[in-house]
Length: 364
Image (cartoon, rainbow, N blue to C red):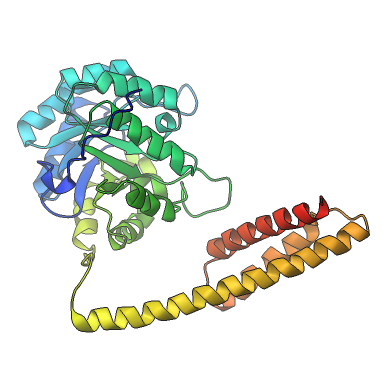
């Protein structure tokens, strides 16, 4: 792998397709037929709000036997989309052969899927195939919430000399009960933007939600977090789609969603706004300090519990007690207007640190 300094990233505002925020990437989950691809592309182009047309050609399915895409013949359809609508095109690649074929047919953007970005060997193979090209590359977050894997995948693409790069936030696999298909973990893409300055982040509400009913709310959340773009799947007849039918919109429904987004300024220098914001942030700072004081006191009590357990030869983990803590605090949190997932995750982290603290004391 090349360890020379990375070339600067091309700002998304310099991408040929970028007109205004959000950059919109849309098209069917899977290219199913030439007619379906062309009809969808024409209707998306007609909205005037879609910048890049996307379609999956090689579909990595969890189990064999499901529709795995039309493969290379779909590249001719994407070329026709580009020629007849003027839209740039994008598709997913998972092997070096996919890269070579897509580049041969002039695909403008290649994205690396969540199943690929989790595997450094796969990403490196793709990176080597990309070397010397000027194609745009979009890297989806890995299926697991591990920032280092996401950053590492982007770095491998940058090491191949690619400078037009974006990250796609499509949520993370979870075994917990959740309204989402893939839990958003919003702090991770925010952290990614901080770790790699200038990297545009594009939200993929379709894969976060897994259904079309939540797309508007997740899209708005992404805009409120100042993400640069949206990738939303669109199909002429979503209910008949061969893959991910529940999460796709018609082109017209997509346009309505985009028209209803509330776009807010990233920042403001108005004096009254700045004054009030500073006052509110000072209050937040005070509350944060109080939270840390309370956590310090809680850990001291956890230490006393550890000593008491040690004297009586009792194990650190008490599962019944933990279940009761979660149940009680979820109920209390609901009464205080706090989200159940937030309370559960918060106390999971607190409980884990308490166990670590008690274990250290028990093993002295």
